[in-house]
Length: 385
Image (cartoon, rainbow, N blue to C red):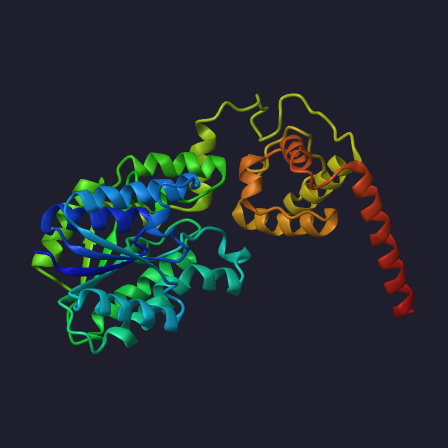
């Protein structure tokens, strides 16, 4: 009872769920680390944004259960900040019994479009943060350190290459016996209500598929029951899932982006087609933008004619062709769209509507860009002569 526990990502959904469990069961003394500034206790009754207000209410509920809570600002990717946070904990409470490393950033995006900087942002809290905790805690006699990993480390996930890699690092770290006390990596399945899967922003159609998956996710009470069992019988790596894991492995081995999107498309109300992916009524491109996109699609799909309402995927398009096509459209039209845009707007008509709605292109901008492009090509031609 009344043990001292430090939780990174302590003001996030999983961090607060863990803190609530420790307050309910052992009236723990808790240190919640968060990357963002948190209001001083004297200002908690002042006006705050909705997220901060909810965090304050959560901390108050935890304290009402008999816990003592210290909230500290610390970015785990900053070694000095981690050192200060641990030192402050030891100075304030005089001891530290365990650490829950729940800090993390959700991933998202095709690997072909991922930059090193974007991947680093996703991986740093789990990889760099864990290393900083290892360095600072090596001389602290903890009972354990528990790492919040994910089943994506084992199964992978759509658009999760960097997040999967970060969690795979946690698993390998725990298996390497890195510290003089038990280190446990828990591969959690998706969580309902709390957790990164519930909060991750995704394109609309993929979000619908994601919400279906979350209906089978871990409930907070179920997760904390599993956590209690894990802490009583610690192993370097534990997988926690509400579904049969062997079945999940079989499914993940065959799950591709094309298959997922095809499943979603089959549930949507589509334009009548002639059975070959084309709209039953051919509508020719009208504007310069529509004609330019149609030309790019025709070249990519090796077709002579594509109408405004013909579906890219029904015409034979797939994620690889889509990626190349999006790059060509971005280059030719001066856009900044991702490959996922094709899944939400799979016809030329829908795509041009989306582009116009987002203010990325209009006819005047297109004509201006075409003129600049023609001048650059002419200048290059003269240099080569």
